Image (cartoon, rainbow, N blue to C red; front, top):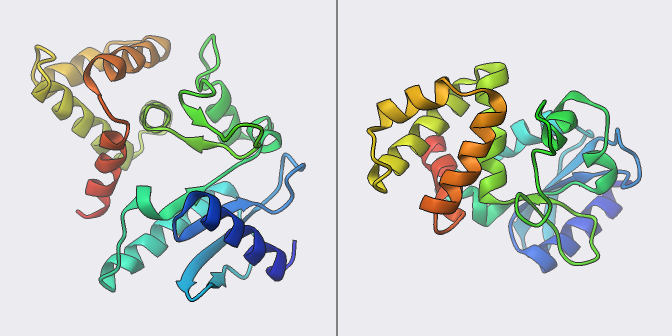
Length: 212
């Protein structure tokens, strides 16, 4: 996929989904495809990242772009701006990131299509819902001790404490620490259903952490 094709695909995504930052596999059918990143600059112009990226590199590039937006006084809300999409071939890919996305070492698939992974009818593009993002963050906290993921989950505990969960945020944290990974995933599904009315509340946690 050359630069003109990347720009054309970004234009299509902008028309379909809105947003200003777009990342998608360069080769739809290739499970190991690298990702293109395109940033809308206004007047139907896009800035295309010069080199193809892994999904991890693309994610880091997106965060860096949002931080640049913030520094320059532009809208830097993740939910409004970012459209990071994958196709079924990449979801099924045998690399570490996609294995976590698909199963995350639990006895049933971690992400349920239509609930955690969203796509338009008949479309191969996949996006995270709020619950899907929450699950991914939990796995990052458990598997990699990721500092941002730990902060993210701490904010989720605070949110639950304010929603009459019946425990303080600190007590909820201790409760989750005692769970196995599979129990933790089930707990997320249960608490999300019971206490979260809108998945954008989870996206807002990410936006809040980026502003700190």
